[in-house]
Length: 107
Image (cartoon, rainbow, N blue to C red; front, side, top):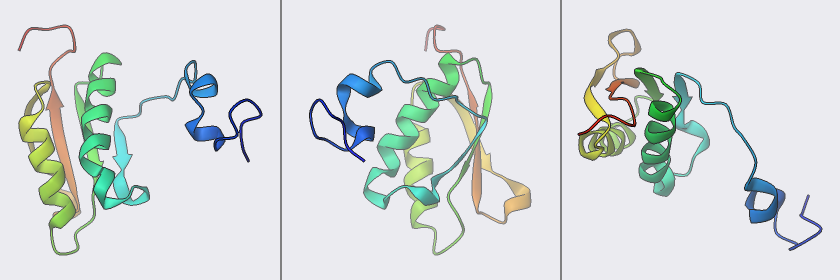
């Protein structure tokens, strides 16, 4: 389904997405995203989660051979709003938990 204004897919129309509010939840399953997009998704999600007042988030990347886990943890390591992160013990390396700073605090 496309936008009537710019003929782009609805999800990519700047006119329709400018005021779209997507709720930020404490967990994000990254399986739905292309591997090339994982870093930017993690960066944007962490910023939005911190702005929404979440202090801890869970990023589900799956176990596999560890490539997604590496990308996620590298993005978290470099993000200024991440205080610390660790492997979720119950997921057997399939998810990472991150503790966040509040978006307006100095880092």
